[in-house]
Length: 200
Image 1 (cartoon, helix red, strand yellow):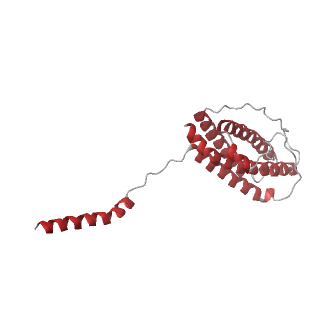
Image 2 (image 1 turned 90 degrees about the horizontal axis):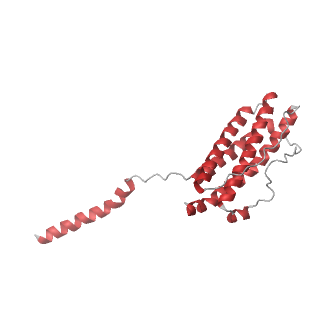
């Protein structure tokens, strides 16, 4: 009788062990909330996509001579090798200041484009909205890690562009420049993510 009870217990235990993987696989996996740095890199990736769409638009489908915006951030001095050496607070502050510069340029482009009834205006408006969202997210992250906000001089841009070709030329240059900036910023946010975890 004791032998029967022992074998029954063993059988029951074996059945429970066999069911264990099935029971654990059906339990809900807790959903990991994306961090601020995840949201920053995702938003930057979205802006890269919007920039590509605007550059592919027929309105910008031509090679133009650079018009030169001297007030835009310098990109030639940045490389992928620098990403591992980035310091958290100064980089966040610098990216925020540079995004504010781009915001100023794109709002100017939006104003001058309206006067020429530019066909890409709706996409440009969407891009400005997404850019403002990225700036807001970045400012929130800066507050969390106590990164200082830099005060940069607002660039002086012409009040209007006389010809539609001037608008095309300025749009093309600004978008090409912004695409390079966003690509670098996206990599920077990914590189900085472990450093944010270290200070929080």
